[in-house]
Length: 269
Image (cartoon, rainbow, N blue to C red):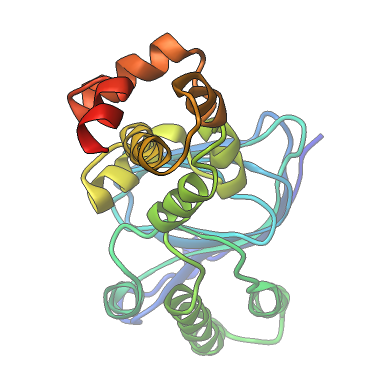
């Protein structure tokens, strides 16, 4: 059964303040956990302490998991839900206001909804501790949370600045490193936490070609080198590059190089 600790501040919101906290809490999700919103005036940081799930936001499908931060932005259409076998444990805050809007505009790239491997748990725990404090009035609470949200945004900004290669670069590196092997994009999707459609879209936007077309093109470029610089037979090259058979290899080679492998070897030598 799902368990949540929720602190609700809707009734205290003050339009004169540059920031308002709407809710904060910790959720121990189950397989039935699902939230859907369309075009609401809110921002949210949600840090995954453990587990995995899915975030569909503004036509992107993302897979937040342990030690990731996912971000909900103002006026976005989003649905998020927990996986059945490893449901999320997450800590979160929902907020809005002019200060919130300026934070996102100044420090975070547009359309950034998932930041991988970025631990903000200490800041989020401080927010929950403040949320549960009974001695503090709402304006003082907002002052304290404002500082913490700024720290979180700066942590996210710096993490993005010094982060590992982009998704497109990681896909390219994976393909380049496995040029003689068979590759499975589904495995890479699981590793990187993105859907296949999103990964293909990102790669195409960066390199102007799909990962499959890129991989096939570079396999043939390597085949050309083998044809020119080795005594390997066409069948041996086909096997070395993990084509299904020599006939398929020759068909792909001709579609890209314009001639068959044997013709290429004769022409170029």
